[in-house]
Length: 281
Image 1 (cartoon, rainbow, N blue to C red):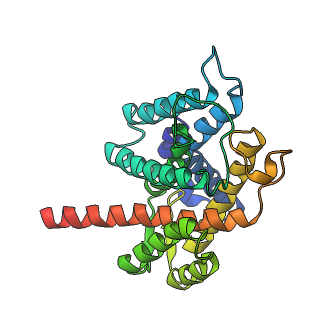
Image 2 (cartoon, rainbow, N blue to C red):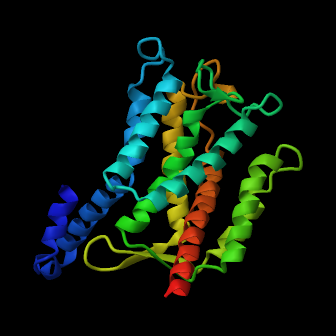
């Protein structure tokens, strides 16, 4: 409703007549509202994580309840047309990608982190709700793309972007056996996206920012959310089993790289869909 009211504001000339700090404040406010709307799945799911008792409710384990909540939020967004069926398909892809990574990381030979509580919906030691934490990142990027009318300028060739994304994802698996090439991949991504800017419309004028800055900022907020999740004991790293401690700052870089991979998937899907529509015309 708030977005509708602000959209109505654009029908007159008042925003166009503003300048200086007043315009900046209005644009920042509108940008924040759109960001909050894009984070709808993230906010509601994190609220469920924070409010869910560790012992569960009525004998139902909390991991199972979190899965039910995540499914309810997801289908509620589609039913209310806050998310399209195409967007839901993309979110499901992120869920599958995230679950595969989780299953590998919690396996007996790796044990990068663990889910300590019992659940009926655990598969390979991973509660099924965990895939929605990765899907939430994809959901945010998809929603923000639409809400802010995003356009990307100087995007690298899609085959190059896809190659880096695949290598980033593969490194999460292979660094346990052949070494961590995270910083080499980060350097390649830095060169690849150095000229890339994202153009967005918070109000009635287009603004732009370096895409790399967006990757780093999103990665930082995911790192903050990860600290909240581990503090509540939803999952734990080995150094947090005795007592909680701050998630290592290096995870920020890992999340930023994961955001690059997620953004590449979204951009590639939109690119393919645009080409299909062009061929149909």
